[in-house]
Image (cartoon, rainbow, N blue to C red; front, side, top):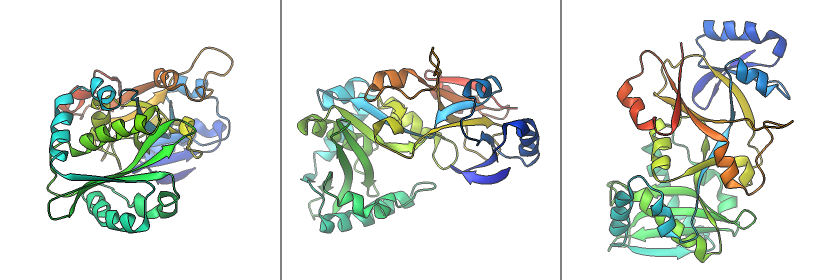
Length: 314
């Protein structure tokens, strides 16, 4: 057994099913947040019965946008906020670059790094993926003020195989043009997807664990934008897989702690991956789980109740 930091929380990894009960006792004694079944080919059904959550480790929030921005707005909880952000962006000069040039990429990076520096646990993923961004299948949209300074921008990848426009990096200067500037940029991306012959918008890939590195508010934000979560592995992300975790405690985490569990289906392979390209089926098989404790503030939980199943951690 090993105690390690995963996704910003303390995980105890158990690599032997025969010692699972012992591992749970040790994990609780060590005040770990999560016990993970780390052996090969686990019995997911049995683990689920034992209180484990079977979940994809990475997800994407997606939306099919055949009518562009109209499709994107139609599913939102608060579309007027997005419209206000779009109106604010319309007051700046927008440019679109496809493919991304090294000069434009280098100009975007300081804005992106400053943006990520204001986010808890923010990392410079755009800087780390230079070769991919400059590889020819990415585009860069930017907005500038009258002086020519960057106000905000986004980098997206055209995934022809999955008919997907995948927004990978967003950045907004401080102060932002509007409270929901990122939503306004997603709306612009939704308009670009059908223009490029792509069916679906992705609002980014992220760890399927909210309450540590990622804020639970990020999950709520994407849901209110009409985002539909699907396992990232079905959309061309090769390193994504199912994991089996048991939540043991919420001490020190940002509550409520959230993740999307994958529900079993009937048949001999209840946890087989969804059919390639069938986003609707994949979405039906995910359910938001909201972990709470006796110390969790009910007001913090209330916004998630329409989507989530609550589970109490003792």
